[in-house]
Amino acid sequence: MQTPSRTELPLTSSSSGCGCCSAETLTAPAAETGVEYSVEGLTCGGCVASVQRSVSAVDGVESATVDLVPGGVSRLTITGSAEPSAVKDAVTAAGYSLTNS
Image (tube, rainbow, N blue to C red):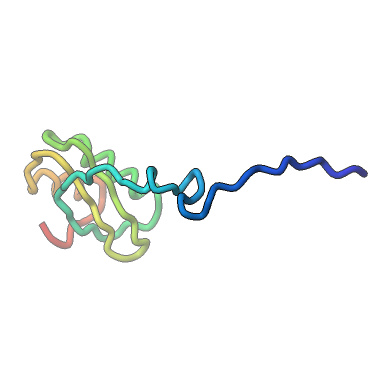
């Protein structure tokens, strides 16, 4: 059995880093500021998708993202001009609850 031949690739100098983490790619885009809510009861990716879908449908929500903490308090971040009461209603309609508003 013959082993496949390998092609030696040149390495970049250590001062500039590799192609995926060079100094040029380390600059992150400006983070959007958003309103954060704490959500209880999320246990999996399906829960996250349900909350994001429900909250994204609220008037004034530009984006909705959830940082999942299975069995704990997850963080919902929204951008836009949605009313907090509408966000709470959307989370409740999805079957979960906010720990703060």
